[in-house]
Amino acid sequence: MARSRPIGLAWRSSTLFIVSTVGIGLFTDLFLYGLVVPILPFILQDRVSLPEDQIQSHVSALLAAYAGASVLFSPPAGIIADRVPTRQAPFLIGLLALLAATLMLFLGKTIPVLIVARILQGTSAAVVWTIGLALVLDTVGPGNLGKTIGSIFGFISIGELAAPVLGGVVYEKAGYPGVFGMGFAILAIDFIMRLLLIEKKVAAQWEVHDDRSEDNTEEQDGTSADQEDANEEEPLLRKKEEDGYKVPQGQSRVVKGFPILYCLKDPRLLVALLLAFNQATLLAAFDATIPTEAEQLFGFDSLESGLLFIALVLPYLVLGPVAGWLVDRYGPKPAAVLGFGYLVPVLILLRLARPGGTSQIVIYCVLLALNGIGLAIIGSPSIVEASYVVDLYNKANPDFFGEQGPYAQLYGINSMVFSLGLTLGPLISGGLKDSIGYGNMNIVIAMLCLTTALLSVVYVGGKPKLLQRR
Image (cartoon, rainbow, N blue to C red; front, side, top):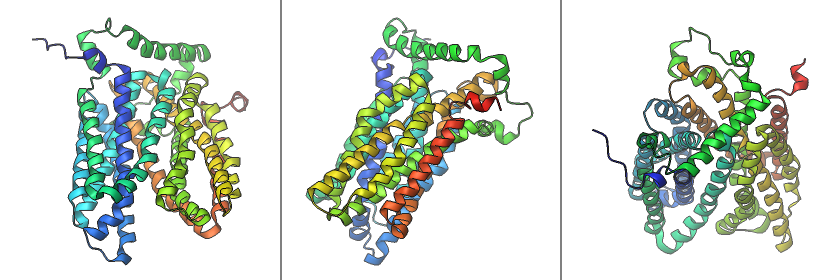
């Protein structure tokens, strides 16, 4: 007996609603992370009654628990997502883990409870980033991935920016209930959207193509147009080229169980993951050093330092979709090369800020905005390039990778690498800042960007023709 048609099938399976749901999911993850981190010292002091000299070490341990869980659980989340019939179920389970984590952080009064809460929060982050990005690719296709990722990243940057500021203000006015009440409200919205979501492949069972012709045509045409453009540039993925992506017979049991591992032999994919790692390292370095530098230069408190992030994030919000569209139009190589290359001088220029009043604050804000432009440019190339490479392997070996392909596994690896960058970024930047100073620290990070730009010239989008001839 055929199932009845779901209420609101057309809009619940529309591209706009699916992408918005993923965006809200990623926003919720970053918002709750930013909301909780600033009040962890107060939780340890007020509820756990830790001595003052033990608070910093326990805060570091709680941060490490989150990061470690996110790194460890990202690959398994990808494997599971590629083997279950739909992405929605694990997407919902990830949110339930985040709800449990938030409840435990709200009510917890012992260190073990808080550590378990942070592990659950990190696990939820692994799930939402891995499955969310796979769901976006399923929905919009590779042809629209860049601008979609750029738009989502621009939107979720608001959560990253607003959470610490709101958390500090609300904590002062309303205490823990106010802070966590705000978190639970966002979780409720996120849960409702994930519950209502219907994936495209599930909606196809009711043959609603006529109701969604414009919406479906946009995404499908975007994909087919991209494929047509790609076919014009690389005519029909010639047999000779396709053979280069064939997976030989006789692979080990480990590779068969986690087939994305075979793709990691490709230097293009490795460099794409390096872009993600360096992008995360940059973001984490800014998060770790802007507050302390603002305090040293201008005597800013936590709220004033938080407001400085507006200068960094606003260009990301405005230019992210534009940069993503350019990646879709011209490929990831120009954005990767120009973006990381552009960051070299603007990172070095951050040393120009000096202690002082309004004029120096304006200079620092302008310099942060210039860096924000670079962050917007490098927001999309990594995930788009990685998706392109894995798509080539999937098309050449459809039976090896399974019906859904290895895309969730890819985004699991990407999430793991990105989380590793977010973990090491503060340690690297903080250590460098303490040992050689803020200006010299940014020179070191600029050299990292220069190296990344040079590697992008060679590997992102394939080797240049000049190098292929040699």
